[in-house]
Length: 80
Image 1 (cartoon, rainbow, N blue to C red):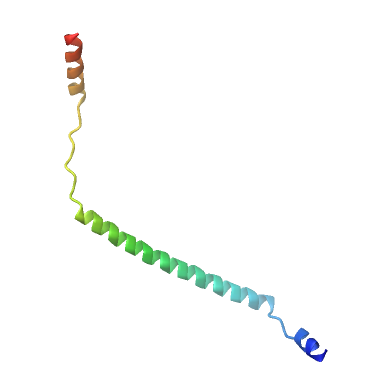
Image 2 (cartoon, rainbow, N blue to C red; image 1 turned 180 degrees about the vertical axis):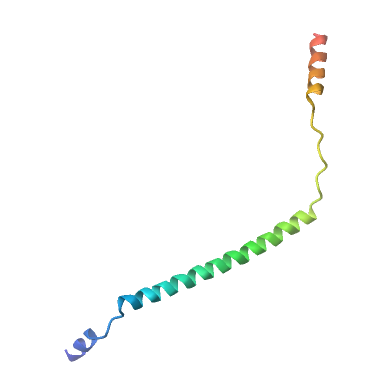
């Protein structure tokens, strides 16, 4: 029974110390996640730039003007 009493008297951490330990652990986790996210962003950025450099620029497509559409419509109407 003496052993049980000794274990009961083990000093507990104070609330301030527990809060400090928890705060430090949380900050370490957040810093590790931020570092991993930054490394992933750099990797993806490099892949994107490589892909953009390897693809040729598309040729510009000429837009149809309203006059072209009107001319076609008038030709269709005149045929009927």
